[in-house]
Length: 361
Ligand code: NAD
Ligand code: MN
Image 1 (cartoon, rainbow, N blue to C red):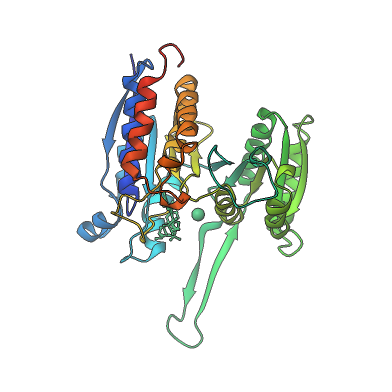
Image 2 (spheres, rainbow, N blue to C red):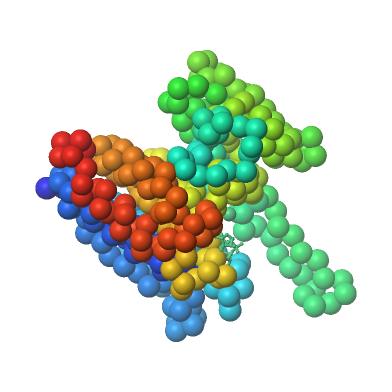
């Protein structure tokens, strides 16, 4: 039987609640006769590790992950450590160290979820946002001089490379081509940012020639926010820079009903390194340790993990079960207006996996 080696990194805050829930659900799928097993290894990196060792993860930490088939991640972010230290010391270290340059963020309004767009039908909102995940505004290029002096100056340089833009455009066009509508929106800001974003647009046009069957358009990022609210059905696949897509995908998650539902995959499309799957939300300091965290974003991330492993039947079963569970308001966590706990939702998912007719997956 095939055994997949999965690294689990809960990190901080509610990551420590939703990642074990995700592991429980993956184990339930394996136990239901899906034809594979998981070999989980847990890594206690994050804020507590930082307090004990002065770093978010060990310097050689990437070597411990290198031979895994996938990584399930929670969140990096601790109330007592600056956010740029937690983010760069853990999540970005893995994303950039393993060149997971495509960050894929699907959004749909799941059954039973009360989403804020009153003028749209649930079917009108079915998007995948492709986020450039290796450079751009988060390249880490910049610095501070004259710290603390009146003449202090600081820069964060957005670094775009032709190779980096070509590969994310190609990934996005290919993903758009694989979806029924074959529709891609390239998000830009080339009116104001007249160097790198102009190159971004030029490369989009160049790559589009490789995909004559994909219909595509361009939208400025500010206009894209309004279009997401006013004309959601006009969008399908979107590609945007690291910062733009970061912001647009939180908006997308909120429009679909809650940040607690939205999944993401940090993919190395060339499969040189393990890819990493995580809910898009953060540590949620306001609710941590209370059993209030919605685990659905992590479960949906597990669906993406299974798809990446090629376990399409198990992925389909888990997504069906997630939708059965969201359809039942008694199984909604507080962010969805309900009172179910993380554990109750997890158990409901596991029970439905166990009860799924044999042979269906
Ligand atoms: P957040 O996502 O942690 O929380 C925003 C709001 O959404 C909060 O009110 C929270 O309670 C709610 N929420 C989020 N996930 C939820 C869930 N699963 N169930 C129910 N409610 C949920 O964002 P923030 O407050 O901006 O950030 C908190 C910390 O997390 C910061 O340190 C930040 O840097 C970090 N962060 C990390 C990541 C990551 O590691 N990928 C992503 C975002 C934020
Ligand atoms: Mn974000």
